[in-house]
Image 1: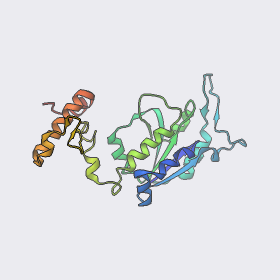
Image 2 (image 1 turned 180 degrees about the horizontal axis):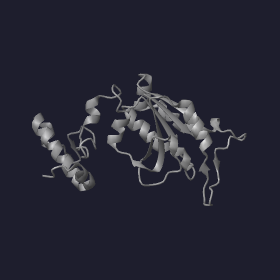
Image 3 (image 1 turned 90 degrees about the vertical axis):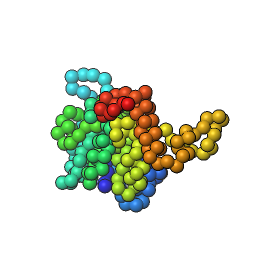
Image 4 (image 1 turned 180 degrees about the vertical axis):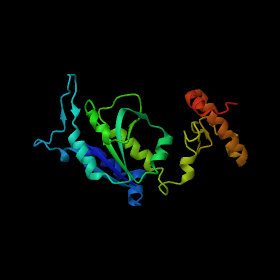
Length: 227
């Protein structure tokens, strides 16, 4: 997969590429992450990419020309153009899986008061990572890059992410490691039993219990039997 990120602050992504799973994926040639400075496409001699709003209002708006030209320079027949925006579809694990099927993602990082509405004509999808406002779309884009990259075949073992939270509209089950007894708090006996069927049953019960307590909305969404 190739991921192009159009941003005013490409340096924000430098460390992201150097560590952990993303570094591993890049080294294994599972993903290519390319950073595109939006100012490089400005036709303004001062490389300006923003301007005041028509109709008045606080905050600057990203102008359409640099974004149009940046996307045009990157887009291929198999490209999917995503705009990070608080007005977009709320991002969930299901969408992360869907995006792994794409060959080429172009992610536009909004900034300031947003982007000129006409930019939406060249955008395939708007995505939001939550009902709150960030200074810009860079951090949100990092969330997309990280969550998608780790799901690409061969980056991590498929069993690892198939058992994670949200894959069946349930939170993940509790996990334990050594020591067996930590300050009087013991690991549940079933996990020490070696009985795989009982462990599997216990974990599912715990998933339902934790989801009902912490995120009942997921239970409703998945229509999971709460018993």
